[in-house]
Length: 503
Image (cartoon, rainbow, N blue to C red; front, side, top):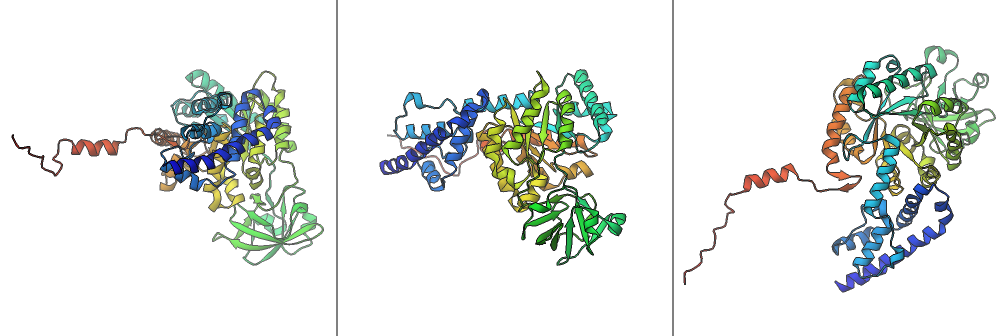
């Protein structure tokens, strides 16, 4: 055992020293965030330093020694390492002991969550966000029913409708809050750069363009350029073509059709269709386009988004930044949101591109310049950008890193989608909904069965939420265990009791 302890000390001690060195290296960054965020920024740096190492063998050895394997230490990484060192007999100077232990880390995350979403209705269960349909601008009773059913955040998507419709939604939310006495925050999603298909000529009249695997077509930015080619489509976002390079993939309609850049021309790009994952091989009008391999130089914060800001400052509690990619973009929007005066309008960073995933630590540290902010895992576009097969892995990594920064997370896109559309859930989406309990808020898209979805979600979250806090599993009593032991209580064990001889 002494050999194991000696070996563990020789491995854990350098990890601790690297974490402290990383903190010193980032002193200026930590000092630059909001005072309420400095402990969280420091812990994020500690955790990122720790996760630069392959800890799998060490974790096995720690577990074998009956010590913490560091598996649930995201929120208090340095303190956990210090506790392991102390259990191994290494003294940690009192002035070096981190204040960010597990209770303090939970307090910081709870404080951030309450600042964004308000007080929770149920312990250890996420807040519920509902995406508003246009009809809810004129249907007060429906809005009231949603709040009574558990909605604590109302989402207004500024990519649709207009300020007059949004104002109707806001008034109905505020009236329902006053009537029911139940709180409900207002979250407004900025549209972001709309990268959509544009069809020309006969295809525009039909609303679709038939394509085949192996076929070539051109991507242009104007109709005049498109008319020079036999088969061409356009893109709503100007400036994209200059960023494309040979070999870059282009995905249409949530990845249903995949193409690759074959050649760049002066005012067009030649594409080759390499995959069609649909029985209907059509590129349709106004469908999304994703560029997962391309570093776009276009700005994520559009002129339209900036025009929406004054309305959001007046009516919203939170603003969602769509397709954010760089910390400098976050800084620009933060500056605009400070125009709210005494009203606190918080920022939600929507992670939906490969570049945002790569830049996540910088995005979080920029977000920490404000007293409260959050992150949305926008799994729809994110899955298309990074590949559906990687979504499960990446959404977990985002959750871990955000927990290290005590940043509340919104789990979004297609939660109980089939139930919302048809009234009957699939088995896989029920499992997905249970997984969503690791986040602080869950977003539901608009649909015909929103009240049913809210009731189902609350039931799923109440059951699964009692088993874990974030990714740390807790041992509440298990009905299965109690049922078994009750059945066996009083039954013979199968062994005859030992008969002692009388002396």
